[in-house]
Length: 115
Image (cartoon, rainbow, N blue to C red; front, side, top):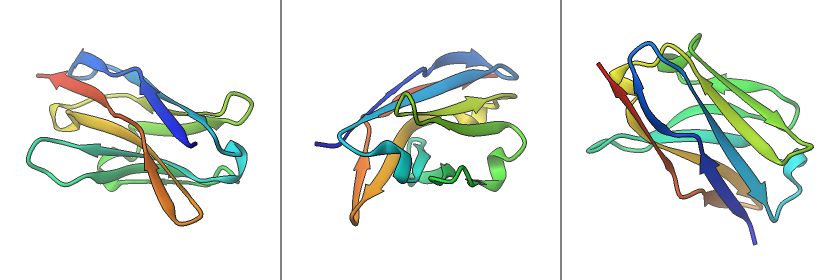
C-alpha cells in the first residue's frame, strides 16, 4: 500500500523559510518521480515542483529561484526547501507520485505566510 506522509508546514513571516518533507512507503521509491503540489482556498491544486528518478527537476514559474526540490533515496523522502516565502505561497502543500497510472497523494501540510 502506497503511503505518503508530509511534514514541516507551519506559520512563517514573509521572507522566511520552511522545509517540507514527504516520507514514502509501499513503493520502490528511487524509480518514481515525486512531486509537490499546493492548493489555496478557492483555487485549483497546482504543481509546485517535480523531481524525476534521475534527479531532473521542474518548477512552476512562480517558485523558480525560491524553492528547491530534492530527494534522498536512502530515506525514501522528498523535500521542498522554500525560501523567500510570500503571502501568495499560503496553501496546503501535497506530496504526489504516480505508480502504474494511479496517482497517490499525502494528507497535506498547511503553509501560512503572514505579511
